Image 1: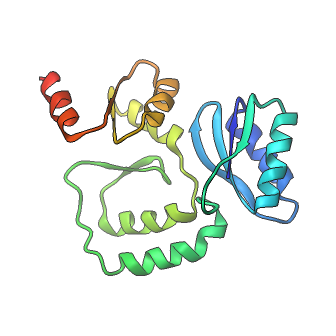
Image 2: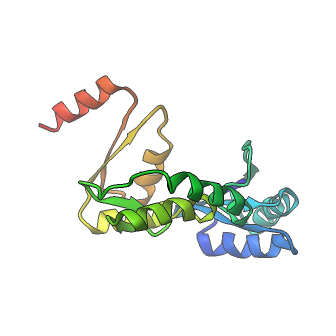
Amino acid sequence: MAAVLGLGFDDVERVAEAAAQGDVCQVANENDPMQNVVSGAKAAVERAVDLAKEAGAKRALMLPVSAPFHCELMVPAATKMAEALSEVDIREPKVPVVANVLAAEVRDPALIRSLLVEQVSGRVRWKTSVEWMAGQGVTAFWEIGAGKALIGMIRRIAKDAETRAVGTSDGVKDAVASRG
C-alpha cells in the first residue's frame, strides 16, 4: 500500500491503472480531497509511487502494512470474514451506521453483514462518507481512540464541522459533559 498526497481521486485512479501493468493496483482508500491510498501487488504499488510523483503528487510513499488491504487481493480474507460473520447475530442498530464501502446509512442486518464482508476487499470511501454525513446535518465528529488522523481528514472535508479527538473513557465522559 502507498499513500498519495496532493493528487485528487481521479488522478490517483489513473496512476493506479497505469501502474497495474497486469498486476493488481487500485485505489483502496479515498481519505480526503487530496489524500488517497493505493493497494495491490508490491511491484505495481511501487510503480504507482513513481508515477504519482511524476504526476505532481506532493508526496507518495509506501506504507508499512502487513497486507494489501481493501483491494481484490483480499478476496480470500473476505471469504473467511463471511464464514466468521455467518455465526454472528447482527441486529438492527439503534443509531444509523454509515458503511464506508457505500458512503450511506444502513440499518438492515443482512446488508450490514454483506457490507462488512465487502469492505475487506472494497474501497474505503471515507471522504464520501463524511460528505454524506455532513449533507445529512451531522455537525460534530468525534474520533475515539489513540490517534487524530481521522479528525485531520474530516477538517479537510467538512471544514465547518466541530471535531474532537477523545483518547480515553474519561475523555468521552468529559466530552459528553461539555456538550451539555
